[in-house]
Amino acid sequence: MANVAKTMHSNHARFKVLCRSSKALRLGRGFLRKVTLARGGALSPYSGLGGAHTSLVQRLKSGLIDGYELASEYEYNVTKNPFSRVWKRWFRGPSNVAKLSKQCDVLHITDQEQAGLVPKAGTSVVTVHDLFHLFPYVRDGIEVGEQHPSFIRKKDLKKVKQGLAKASLLICISKKTQKQCEVRFPGIPTAWIPHGIDLNQY
Image 1: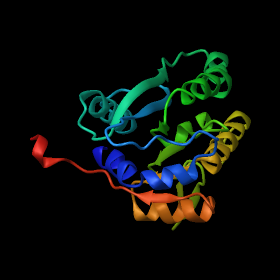
Image 2: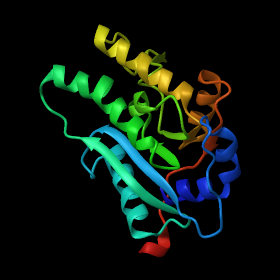
Image 3: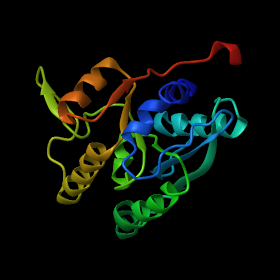
């Protein structure tokens, strides 16, 4: 995940152009750009998406990512109450993240399932790991993704897609995902940054 921030740093001019609010990023030498990392319900750091999020949090906190610092992190505990979960995901979460986005230079949503958190204004980056949950398909008779989502899930997917369509940049972990994003969300800039391991850390 360190590669993500390094690419963001090398392309700071792009972020300046993409900024959808009147606030331009301050790019003076030595200035640390503030990053807010956001996702919805907290996941185990030992899971795939949870691990990717946790790794980026740790690297920003430790100062390993040159030019960036962690302004804040947003996630919440998942409850079993379905009404509470919908309320947090559709209303309270987006409202809280919108407020936090005004206190940072870049809002980074660490997986596409949480793209409903993308606010209307500011510079928002979303890491897209895959799209089969959003756009299920059948290949060689095998169903990939949920073919018949519930009414609530359909509404949720609509919010996720709308969020991706508002993002300033979509960071894709594979070339295939990048091509899919370019087709599904035309006009939204994309970047290919694969997952990797920094061997110097071991």
